[in-house]
Image (tube, rainbow, N blue to C red):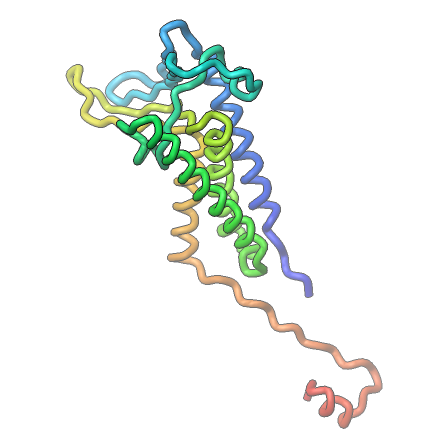
Length: 222
């Protein structure tokens, strides 16, 4: 009997997550482009601050690539490190390029591994696992696209806490792809801790009408 497959969940979340990530990046950077090379929009104000921030790099050379110019008149300021900017701060330009290439290679290998994992029968039958892998693939491909086209990752969401005019908590600037990666990793952890992998269902063959006892024994049914 054919077993139900949830691979459509994997494919759907990967495509929707990737499209949302790129649409939000291009939209926010284009919207907040300014002559001061930094545009901001406050979404939530007060003690808890959440802002959209588009930073551009005035030192970057203009590009004729339409995928870059669609982002804005000036190339964006990008993160050359890993998730939430880890490993990309205060580096020399040559080290930044090397770090970006290393993380791009890791992302490519991770994407291939995730696609291969999603094709396994046990993965296709697990809705939660398919959802986790789809989100992780969306985040991986979203940031991989940035690394290939822009030489780094575009970040634009900034969350921090401010008390008495002083910032007491400052979360690194991030993007939708990072959110997909964190959400996918969380679902993957939940799946691994609380849900057992589904085993293959046994297939019982029904003997044809008129089959004798000797034939059944010979075929191994009885």
